Amino acid sequence: MLGVDLSNRVTSGQGESTRLDADPCKSWPDVREGKYRYVVIIRYASSLVPPVGPPVAWFQHDASATEVVHEGASAVYRVDGPLRYATCPS
Image 1 (cartoon, one colour):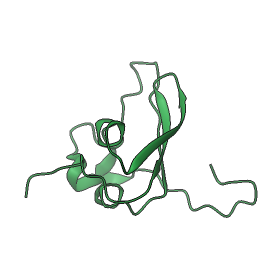
Image 2: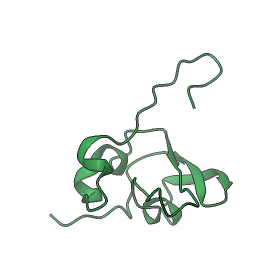
Image 3: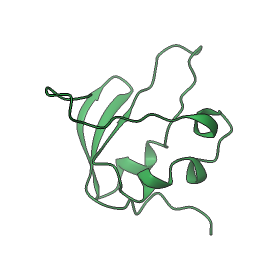
Image 4: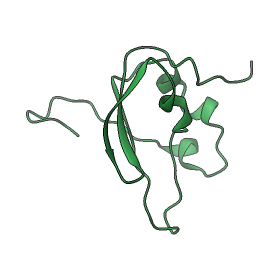
């Protein structure tokens, strides 16, 4: 994920965002606002590793997100702007 010349900035969820009961609207505002060029969603087949990350639904039907890689339950999305379907209560 760092790229061939190690120039990409890679971040992952930390702190409250990794809690199973975390509110994705509060945990992932930069993702909703389109501040990342690519988002990697990794889902493990093991029930021992719960899914942590922004909801896949935010990307699946949004014109600002394009799936560029898909393997099993995991995917990489290119994000070209704020996500319209990542709605959150005011």
